[in-house]
Image (cartoon, helix red, strand yellow):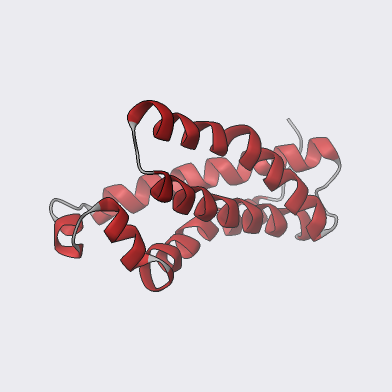
Length: 136
């Protein structure tokens, strides 16, 4: 394991939550609800914010740590924003796209919803990796 900047990992861990609040809120919230075929009220039924956001933060911190390791492996930590973009795009193509495809191909999920989620993950991963790459 490579040494990582823990402050950068913690900061990058909050990025997906911030991006998600904007993405599934004011930016694409109406489109997301339409693709889900749900109302805002239906989404809120049984919603446990502490459990949902808590687990999301833990997973985002794990993603940030692994991105930091990937950046260190490729020599991209403490470097340019483009190093972060490069690692994020590799992760997106290698890990996010196959999972999204499986959901569409085998679970018959809506392609529009999958693309909306892939785009969110691409933005979140890229911003996480950029934070980690430039924060020395």
